[in-house]
Length: 383
Length: 159
Image (cartoon, rainbow over all chains, first blue to last red; front, side, top):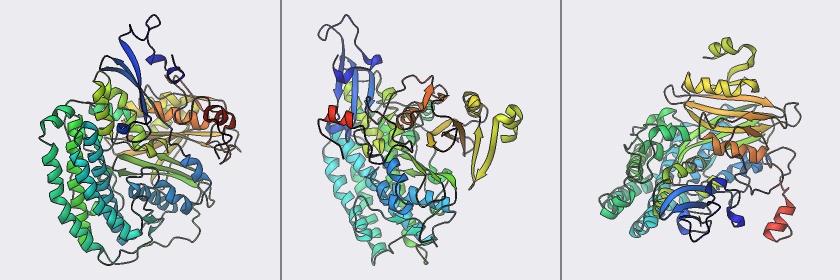
């Protein structure tokens, strides 16, 4: 037993078996592995190609974000949240800003809310595109990666023109937005919508009826609706299991109650359904952006926020529908300029917990597919 | 719901109120597994959103342990909070909501609060041999386990 595998009692090999005459084998996947989407280490107990059990070892990217928050002012902590789920930084920022706004008991003006919705939905699209490209690459389809990265670039260009940054955007501030939309913003977004709609059909053409794709994803990593609820799994994974639940509808925030969109759901809760749900979600995001961009209301983009943010004593929990699931912020204020405690409820962390149940009894190659379909970002898992 | 619970448990439910439109209740730690069971089975809070803690070193009962619950049928949230002293443990909620497994491990890792009946209570984000619990208020922002860093990473300091 090596140092790496001790203390993993439920994964241990039988005592009388040596490495060669045992049918069971413990192998180590990651932390440096191209298909783990970052520094995730999974210890697999295998019987031939069959997975008997897994153990996730996480924390390689732990930066102590929650501790940092306690030592920064509310505004200073804002850019840090972008570094958790770094492929959907705009969603992180939206959740944090709204949580602090709630604590201050103020609301962002309608114009700011519309800008927020447009950018957040574009970011959801970018996040799903990155997921599709890498997930397909893991399974062996290389082409979608080039397609999605090409098109994601257009979204990043809009972000860059809006706030100067492409990934960790820090686009919003407590109380609204710092930047007014640039000249030609609406035209750029409309142009992008026209550009990207046929592209999503293109991705679907590559995969939806592709025999290899279907064989590799159908009935792989099944998760029932009941299991999802018990394991706290949210986001597209929950919806693919047939639960029609989306925080944008259930507890609308920003300006989401102004728009019409549907919540796509699946039936089987397998990897293929999760793929279909995310593809549908991309179209719904476009629908929301299309409705929002034409009628951004006039007015201020910033609410009246005191120069020094000093929320009254109290605590608040606010959550939003991030591309990965429910992203929540629990903030405790002691009345000073720095938060007393910030707890981030990360969707990736909680969803990753379902990995063990999803891959038990399946083949080792399916582990790759399941990690991809969970759509985790290790920056958010480890924080 | 609150009045029903208050009638059932009397002064065990210390406080039940709403702040900024969000419901929360403070209960005695002795009631913890029972009241969580009741909330799931009778009040349909079937989804445990989060388990977390807050450290108040100046208080006698230093830690708040908080369960954030959500009900799919009624689209409602509630926060259940209990106060415990340093060294006290709380019953685990893993049997009620399996999702509590990693969440409780994280609370243990960050605060050193033990959960009785947890199937595999060990550190999750920090390495196994690490000393100290970083989210306690007496743990400095640049503090680290130097001994661990020197032995395992072979460098003088991680700073």
